[in-house]
Image (cartoon, rainbow, N blue to C red; front, side, top):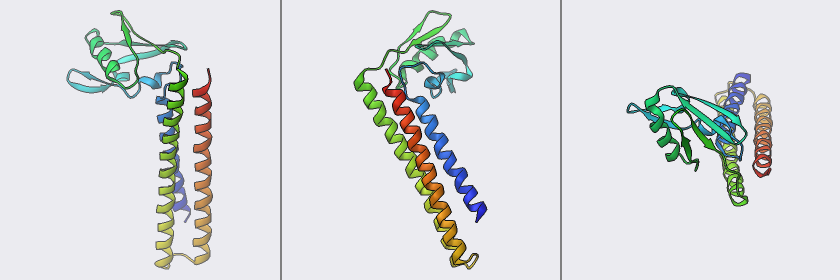
Length: 184
C-alpha cells in the first residue's frame, strides 16, 4: 500500500511540476528566459531548442537578449521567434537579438488568467486520474485478497487526502500566477 501511495504522490508531483512549466511560458509583462524555452530553431534542417544554439540572458526586466554562437544562425533564430506564438518582435543588430517585452493590456491580462485557469484545470484532471488509478489498484488488491478491508479503506482515505493536498497546491499556484499576471 505504501509503495502504491508513494507512486501516486510521485505522479501527482509530476502533474504539478508540469503546471509550473506551463505557467513559466505565460507572458506576464516581465522578461524571463522561460518565455523562449519552448522555441525550436530550424538549424541546418534540424529542429533544435533555442538554448542549445544560443545564450539567452535578461539584461533588464523588459528585455531578453539572445546571442547565437554561430553567426549563420541569426536569421534562423529571428524567424523562429517571429513564428512562435509569443507575439513578440525580435530586433537583430548582427551581434545580438533583442526582444523587448511590452507592458500587457488589461484585456490581454484577462486572457492570460483564463489560460492559467485552463492549465490548472488540466492539472487537477491529471491529479484526479491518478487518484482513480490508485483507487482501482486498491480495489483490485482487495478483490484478489491481497489486503484487508480496513487497510483498503485506510488507503483510500490516504489517497483522497493526497489528492486534496495536490489540488490545493494547484489552486495556490494559480492564485500566485493570477496575482503576478494582474500586477501592473
